Image (cartoon, rainbow, N blue to C red; front, side):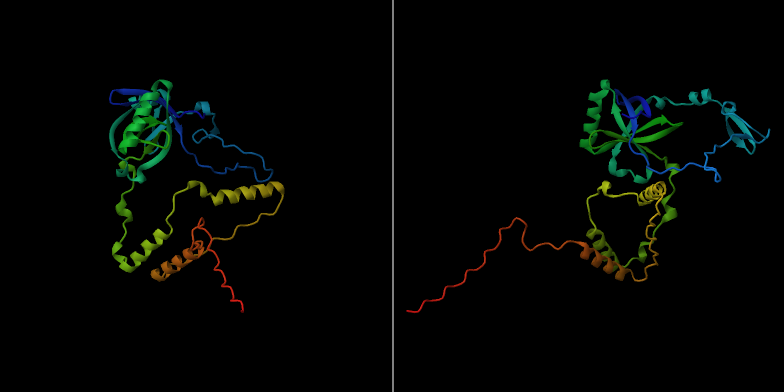
Length: 283
């Protein structure tokens, strides 16, 4: 099991249970090292003091906050530790809200919640209560040098925690308003038909990062000394002039991709061929 990122107690009402948080997802990216161009050797960044015009070692560093241009106040590790609120060790559910009331734009990072052995029953109780009522818990937890507002919700087999942005961290929607008066009724009707024609069950496993796969192929070809097969260039798209015509063409393209269904179900019995009538024999 991977290392936990937070350990403490979760409380709801007078019920308390020990829990751990584990990162639920991580970005898979290809990282590169910085090399010296002439001999391909690794390089390192040097910490440099501008005032004394010389390198410094990490042990001589302190944290400073710039409160005015060029003026700093020093804050050490002990000061930062003292600033930690009680939620650094205890996560209390403050209220319960309907899951559908939360705009996904507030979601930040996802974590799995795992109970310690002493809290398994209370954990199962909270999981089942949230699952049956359709509510999620709203709480606060301090980790990674800040206090987060979080929601706790039931997943497929356990509780999940999502850190969320505060309201003042989310950009106002008024900046990105749409003008629905530009849409004609017939265009909207056809657009809705197009949406329904692409209806599917969400399966995240069928989607892949093509950029990452291309980079892997490039690196492997360089390792093996082969020429890189370049992917086709992205198609250059022009603004659509006739929306109705574009939607109709899209519908036709989808119809061509769909398999033709047989008139009979696959398990239907085959039709018997009609028997030929016997010729009458001459008497």
